[in-house]
Image (cartoon, rainbow, N blue to C red; front, side, top):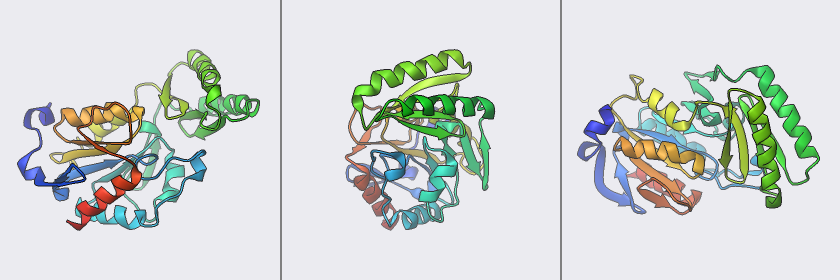
Length: 260
């Protein structure tokens, strides 16, 4: 592939580092940012997160520096994530790649049949209602079962969603942080990144990705393969070449890049 052959060095990065992360030349980069666990700290419930008051200004500044090449890439539905992003009007990839917003238009993955997704949500809600500590999160493209409030229920949550995946063709089961998720087969953040980087506005720039979860690893690995900059936020084994301890450190690094 093109990126694998040329790599990104010299003209795309300065010699400086911020918290051990090389400082890129933002005007020659595309910046992919995960949200939960990367830009904001995780919470017991998806709707209980606390967003840093400076995040809106940070994203707007980074978008200006990259000439509009800041992409929020998240497991959340786009309809959910936009309430936390202030005035950010740039590209958003939601549902781990099952949704995308480009030029203001939201499009769902063609395999996310609304009737099937609705049925999955109804069954998962009913299951969670009889298992205190489980939380069902419905998305336009799938469903998530969170067990953060009761880790003893992880095995039951897995068994339930695995059974659903076996009876609903075209949906795969994935493990996330304290949760399991059903989403359309064949999608992923790495797949969406690859497709977006072929777009004329992004082609030839260096891909940068900040991610924290095991679901981010394929995308972190892909960025490394392209010679880009992959940053792991938090603990755990990773393909990324750089690591930051927590979302606060990620925001600080991005802020220093902006101020450089």
